[in-house]
Every structure is written in C-alpha cells, then in structure tokens.
Image (cartoon, rainbow, N blue to C red; front, side, top):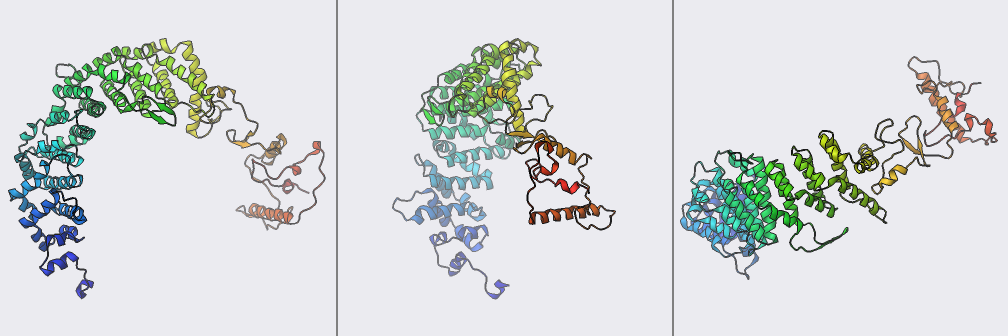
Length: 623
C-alpha cells in the first residue's frame, strides 16, 4: 500500500505541527484545520485547548475587527475560530467551563449596543447552540448566572440571536427534570416579546418577536416538549387572558407592521386552542382566550371594511387601490380559525357583526386573489355544512349569497363580450360553492325556501348544469360517452373563453365526423368520404370478426399446402402485399371513369382518414 511505501498524504497542518514552531494564526490559515479537528488530531487539540489559545479563538469571534483590517482578520480568522469552537472538542469545552474569564469573554458579545455585526452574531449563536446541545446543564447554569435572557431580547432584531433564544427555551424545557429553570419563567419572556410589538421599533424586531411567540406554540415544538411531561408554561402564559389582551392592544393601537405580525401570533393562538380542545373551561364557558378575541372582533372587522393606508398595486389586471394586503388576509384567517371552533358564541358574534357579508364583498372585489377565494370558500363550506341554522340563514338573508352568485355570472358574461376578455378569477370557486349549496339543500329541506326561487332554478338549468358538463369533460380529457346523463352528444371540451350562451348554440361542426364504430372519436371530414364508402367498409367485414380470406392462387402467390397453424393465411397475406408492391412498381393506365350509378368497390380511394390503408377489392374477387 502507498502509505507503507512512504507515499501517504501528509496534511499541511500535520507538517506545521511537526516543525514545533508555529502560531495560531498560521493554523487558522490552513484549509485542513477544521478537518483535522473533526478527525481528533491529538497534537492539534492539545494545542487548541490551551487557555491562551481558547481566549484567542473567542476574541476573533466576539471582537469586531477594525475597518482597515486585512480580509483574513475580518473573515478567515472569525470563521475558522467559530468552526473550531463548534467542533465538539471535549478538551476545549473543559477549558472553557473551568475558566470563568473565558465564559465572561464569550458573553460580553451580547453587551454591545444594537445592531450587532450580522456575521459575528451568526458565529456566536452557533457556538452557544453547540454548547447547549453538548452540555445543556452546564450551559443553562452559565446563562442563568449571567442573566442572558434580557441581553438576548435586546438583540432580538438579529435573526441569529432569535434562533439562539428559541434554542435556549427548547433546551430548558427538555432538561426541566434535571435542571432548575424557574429563572426562565420569572423573566416574563412572553410579556417582553409582546412589548417588542412597539410601533417605535423596527419592523425586523416586530417580525422576530412574532416568530419567537409563534415558536412557543408551534406544533412541532409542543410535541417535542410534551415528551418530558413538563407543563408548557410559556405556552400557558401566552394563552392567558392578560397576554391575549396585551397582544390585541399592541397590534390594534400600533401601525401596519405591528398589526401584521400581531395577527400572525393571534392566528396561531386560536388554532392552537382548537387543536388542544381548549375552547371551553371546566364550567362550560368559553375559554378566556376566545372571550378576549371576541371582545375585539368588532375592531378587526372594521379593519376589513376600512383598511389602513396602503400603496396601490399595479399589475396585469389593473390598479388595486387599495390592495387586499396581508393584514386583511390574516384577519380572514382569524375568522376562519374562529369558525372552526364551532362555538355558538362565536357564530352569534359573526351574525351580529355581519362578518360574512363583508367577506363576500372582498371575495367579489378582488377577483384574482386565489388565496382569498379559497379562504372564503372554506368558510362557506363550514357554515353551510354546520349545524347552526341561524348562521346558515344569515348567508341567504344578510349576505344574499344566491343573488350575488347569479349576478356575478351575468357580469362575467358581459365582460366576456369585450375583446381579449377572459373569465373572472373566482368563477371556478362559484361553481363549487353553488354545487355545495344545492347538495346541502337536499339534506336541509328548509333551504329550498331560498334555492326554490325561479331565479335560482333558471340559473341551475341554464348556467350551472352546462358548466358542470364542461368540467366533467375536461376531467375526462374527452367528451362524455354517449348515453350518459348530463352531457349532450354535440358537446366537446370548450376553450376557457367560451361563454354560457355559446353552449346552447353549439351544434355538430361541418368539419367533424364521427367514426360509426367509435361514436365518441372525432375526425376531420374527407371530401372523398360518402355513405357508399361506409357501406363498403361494412361489406368487407360482414363476418363480424374482421378476418379476410385470401386465395393465394388468385393473387399469383405460392403459399404451399394448407397448414394446421394458420400459416396458409399468413403466406397469402404476405404474397398479396408483394403483388401490391409489384403493381405499384409497374403502373397501368387508369381505367375510364364509370358512370355514377355504376360505381363499384374498385373505384374507392385506397386511403382515407378512417382507415390508414384499404385492401384492394380485386384481392377478394374470384374468377
């Protein structure tokens, strides 16, 4: 082998270590230092684990270099130092935890004023996260002793620090059985994060604060924490009436950014309440969380009707002034989450505030917003398929949903008459909503009071039924088979710009022909095709099994004696094809055209659109 012969590769780091005269900077400049650390190079680790070398590594991570420093000081040394300190080297970690000065040096990075250096913040977060993963108990004690949580909250605008905060909370919850973490709950972490939704702070701070709060109630983290059996105290604190009230006040009293990110937290809170089955208390009352949301529901609905000022958006469909915006879309998500609870108190509040008419107004106003359309359709599905009759009736009375559907189709037909027009974006959803209402009307008989009107019945027969037929055809990829109810023989898959009026006027096209053997298959009509051709086609296979008997002697072939395996017919067919090729090689003058009434099979075209080729009738004529 190569290494026995002295050809083994020796890394530059190993060669440098063999010299005995080297510096930390020389090692950090070598590309192989990280790989050598992972391979547990003993000589290298013994050197890096010295207190003065660990301190130098920490300095490169926590000290921002001067603006006129070399690139290796700005980028290479900090990066390599962070990788070494995150390489899970036990000797290096023993040195760090045995030396208070080294730990103090590391966490002085958080004492700087905001904003932190983004690059160094990422390196610092990686090092502390590795310490938490490898030595959680010791690291948590260090964090408690140095009161790190307020420092992390000070720099929550940095995403790397945000990730570190979530890592601290996760590790604390997982190790609650073997480490005291009361100090974490005493910091009022939830309240301080809610206070970060302050209009005076940057939008990045608002965004990261909402990410942290949502992270506490994230389903994945809850499942992970629930394994320990420890109560989710941070989630419980976030769901408390005080925290919900504090959140609603912050987001409604602030600007667009606080409202947007506050709604993100509120949506997850309501959803988590539904998933945990915590809609009611032990005394059968609505949970405090839902009660607080219902108190401020009117304010949220007012935002739907009168949104805050927004910059107009110009796109290919025109100018949106104002656009829907993320705030109103998230409020609709809150409404959707509330309706999912199926609580009478929630449904009564929706009826009294006329929430659904407002939702339908937005549905028809923003005709190309598919997120909005899907959300409203899901809302209507839950209401119509629910058990609250009063809530259902409000759709027909307050929201006037049936008339709005009919009017929307009329407006779509008028718009389609314009040049280069196309169907409105919500037409497909309206078809699904209409079918859903019709289906539920067969179960709830009282709904026929609204669906039995002449206007709706006319719409069902003249507009909705043809649209359903077109949709069924498109799903099949071809017209419906004949004899199937709900589809006309003359209907074909129509283009997207076809209007409902065109459907009733459509008839068989002059350029289409149906195969008599396969009625659903359309072909282009050949001028040479006639009813006589069809008759001949049937005469050629009257036996019903499409077999053709050929006499080899008649066509000039020598097929030999009859065979038991059908070889006689095969040989005759081959010889017949050879005769056909010989005839084509020596063309004969065309016979005079017979009279029309004397037309025979020999005068038919050899090729047409139905059969790729036709056998000559002379093959079957006997002397």
